[in-house]
Image 1 (tube, rainbow, N blue to C red):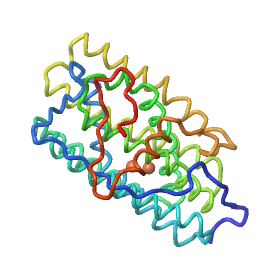
Image 2: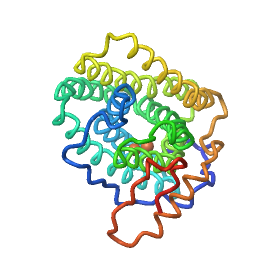
Image 3: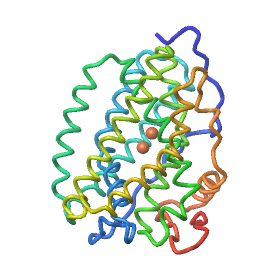
Image 4: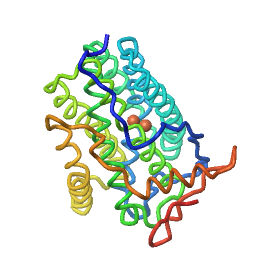
Length: 296
Ligand SMILES: [Fe+2]
Ligand SMILES: [Fe+2]
């Protein structure tokens, strides 16, 4: 049964839209999809590797939580959350297969480790699992803001497919940003485990992403170069400056993702997508445009 003091609050988006989340990645896709920047490419690829393990875990945690929740609006959100995450990880899996085939089969080692990690996590209490889910999702909202506001600096000249794929994923993440938090609050609501979940969920995924990146840089035989070291420092700095404040706010008592406002670019993208005709392919971001407007 859900917590008696839990009350569903209105959110920014009217509903969580289920879209056809698919990209036709070219078969010869270069895993270094940000030209001249293997560090950034491999860092994002490392994060992508985690998705087919993380997102099914989130779905299972939300399904388990559903049995304890009665609020019809929250239950509806939870269904939308699971359908969006289901679409995300399937597309990431296709992308990840290409990354492995096109140069980095060693990433399978990371996949084995993730399988074990999530088996272990699922032996923990549902409260711990939901806190992890809510914590990870609060970091993701920071990721969305980073990728959208700094899209020109991050993706200038990069693969249109991969840049569009990441941005669309993050837009849907912001669209369902309240759901894992609400599920946790309805199931438990306790502050301390939720705060620990921010560190656990964020730290785990960031750690795995970095591990994937380091493995690929080693394969490229550039890991131990001083220039690579400084590029890694730069990416960490950008990540901490842009995503850190979101994690920090999520750690505070009284946090609610509803307080994090959505960006206009994201709203324009959602509006643009709604004008697409049934079955039309998702238009790709023009990464050569100095403003990178929404591609609709
Ligand atoms: Fe997702
Ligand atoms: Fe999500």
